[in-house]
Length: 410
Image 1: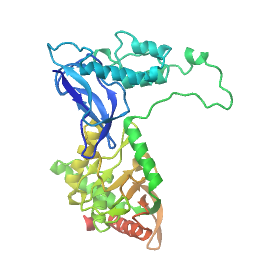
Image 2: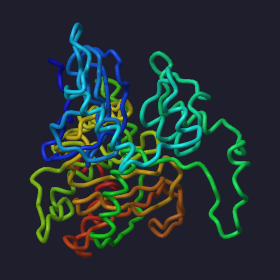
Image 3: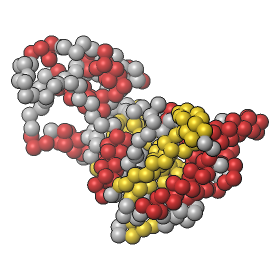
Image 4: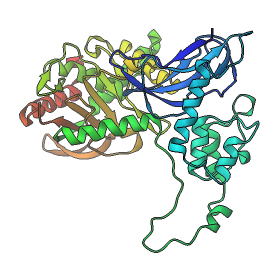
């Protein structure tokens, strides 16, 4: 009997997921443990491995559509097993895939996109084919860099970026009227961007944001980082960054400000026993937020190690949904990009997020003198349903005191 490939449950509260991209094609030979498709949840995009070795058949090609957990999405036929017949589940799945790609007897696509989709010997991932169709691109003109020359999403995007802006297809189009929108390349949202767009849109609709900004002197924090760097080198710990230091300070402060570490839950406030701090990071143009678990219980070397592990896992796409969700507070630092200050959108259901700008030498008054000091803007976005202005102001006052005197709290 063939081995079912099901849509797995990768998160405790997951009921449905979407296939974002297939890494294999109908009839491909796969080995157990090979990545065969990517699944999207409401928290992250995960790679799914083959449960057995053999020929993969009956692939449900449709991507981006919610599928119930446990539903078969393909079958793997082991060596020596009979080829699929119409009565077998794989053939049924293939029929469903064909029907969904051509609903209600719609006529097949015309033009280069239809031709390249059916071209014999052409190997391309479903996502690559979809992007090609959306951009009227003949996949026969694209060089594939995947296994056995398979064309992937990156190959199509690279080709689109390199091709001339005015193609024969475009020249054949009627000239746009002055009122029409400019025609440019249409790039679908990535799976992660769809998740982020949905969650942050929800946040702006449901959470009444308000913002408090404090300009904080960074002299003591810089000096502490210098000494910590030397200490971490001696003990073999990763070099600490300003983000790690602020996360460590904020974790300690949040223990005294439980409402800032709380979450909105219906018409109630959920107060958390632990401080789990999410750190906003960028990966290939997408936003991901890995979480430092029990941040208040870590010392600086432990936090630097965990931050480095999460950063590396984020870059390699090996983080699990559990490592990307469930935070109680988030920090977003854009100072390294030269941003002076900004306001961040709360990551629901959390009640607050801290935005950090760059550190810049500024003239300030000290003991009756005008002197230059390294200053940075810290902006707290709060959900006014659970956090009032005074509570947020008290947190910011304690944060300023701790950042300007970090050795006292650490």
